[in-house]
Length: 320
Image (cartoon, rainbow, N blue to C red; front, side, top):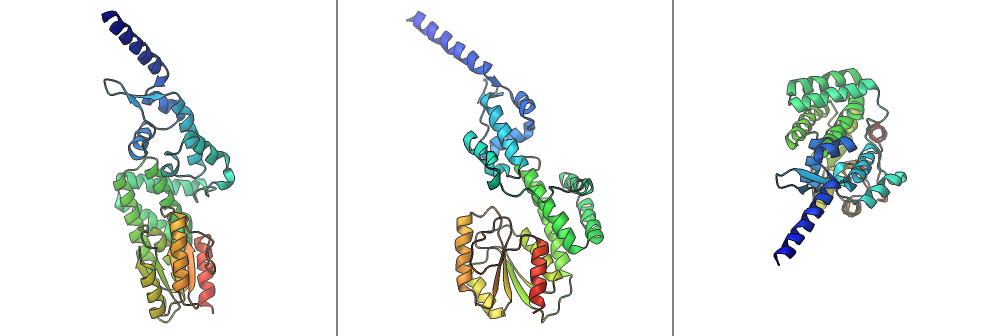
């Protein structure tokens, strides 16, 4: 009996050594894939992958197959996908996402940016990491004065927002950093569009997000574009019920309802809500659906593909 126990223990020890021979530590995994150690830990904590084994001393050990999956994940990220979307996927699912390039989402607006553009965003991210409000605010003010409000919103604020989201998703920024950046940008954009002088009798637009949608920075970007065109913004903020929104549109006799939809809201949900809203709105009220998560199959709705396009559309409305 004792010999059998000894043999079993020896067999288990041999299996353990074999498994460890097919494993590598977090530092080696980082070196093999180019993914920083802190990012690997953040993904494990937030998304449950990669999942290591633990040695008796608490060290992480990863199966060699993890290398291939992380390499595919980094390729998906380089195409513009978010870590929150791809890290949880299986190897086959990530590979299919990368190979099917025609189904990939558009990359961030920083694609094709000049070195000067990239340097500006890098300085702003550095200010976020330092939580230096003065430096970040000064950066916003300088670029807005140099570029003008619309170009600032489109080529600086929107890409910066995307870059902050990417950095948070990839574990480069903490939640507190992301909140700091978002709140400061919201304050700046709000002050920007509210300071524009638009006649009280100008055509009016209600700006909001759909029920359950709490991401409202896109609304402030839209408010800049609409206000610059000469429309009066009625800013309702986030998560307005469809019935209340339709009632406000009728009561205030607005020209348009502008809805911002982020990728955080499932397309099936946003599509159903937008269809319900379109059915409730008076025929004289235009429905505009913008943002990276907006579905584009709602009859009669307008879908601006950029802030410049939204500004041009609003300018046309004002010209009627």
